[in-house]
Image 1: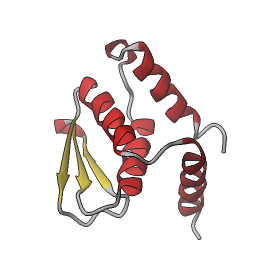
Image 2 (image 1 turned 135 degrees about the horizontal axis):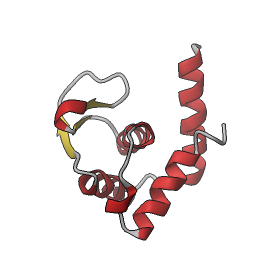
Image 3 (image 1 turned 30 degrees about the horizontal axis):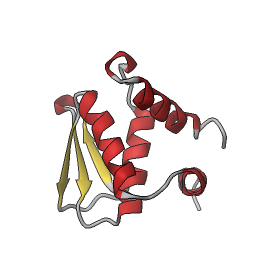
Length: 107
């Protein structure tokens, strides 16, 4: 297993223990991205990570055939990587985003 694969599996394991894989969680992630001026689209595609971020157009393309766990994991990984203007988020969204970004520090 490569280092990246090991890191991703540990992140997914941690997220599995702390995140509920529900439609509500998916909607919370989508709403945060929307407030941060990203557009989430569900399309057919061959994404190794479950999603693709088009930086210049601020579009996140998620594989529509992935299960809900894969969709949530992909959006969490993207949110961890982007620089977010937290002033756009309300307090609950900021706390949720902060907790998502902290998962990488706990590995």
